[in-house]
Length: 315
Image (cartoon, rainbow, N blue to C red; front, side, top):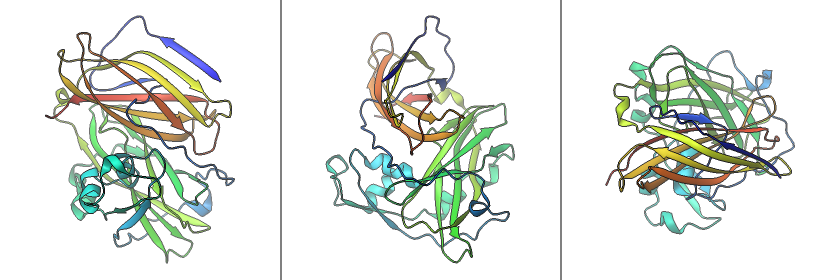
């Protein structure tokens, strides 16, 4: 096991987000990505299109629950609100899901697709998707969103449309940022999962759906990583993270903390993304301890990066 320990001795607080090499959450067990012999696809001719593919009619679909998944993590995969998933599955207890259970994933509403479209800044730069197949036949795609504004953005959403060569078979998914806030001059990877079957070969197009300028950043709490340890597995396909966070607030106050955990290969390419969430009651020092795992889509992990944000938990 490769182990890296970093101790931060001098603390520099900042508003709402922090970046460092590592951390995941304690209250959510993560599901490994499956490996697949197909190599990662970036900007190969079979995967790109110079003009946007037609948008398919939204249709509901089903998701088979895997070990360690939660309703929140599944909703994130499909770019829908967890409350909508719960409403579509009223007979399923989110805290008692079992492997193999079928969840109905609702179609995205028109309002969700167009939210913030009028205020979308033109200076959000999107990379070409990096897509990798998993052993079940599904496809994970990652898109890097870069905020070239000096002010932060919220609700950054990208729609990826996937189709065969003739564009006769189309499916679209929303790639959501793992955090709500994209800081000024910052970057965040957006992730989306396409369930099988995947056309071979396939084409894709990418459209920015939403990116809203933040009017009041004071809604986010100052958050800082004081100490973190990253242990990469021997095969390089997973990493265990332990971290100590410092969150501003009063002792006894409940806070909600989000962590974007990004696994990178030796070339700096995103090979895994996880959004982790926890609600904690602050002690007198404002310390929140978190730990967990991040998994690769198949390429060896060389580094793990963390971005975090926190807000007061709603009672």
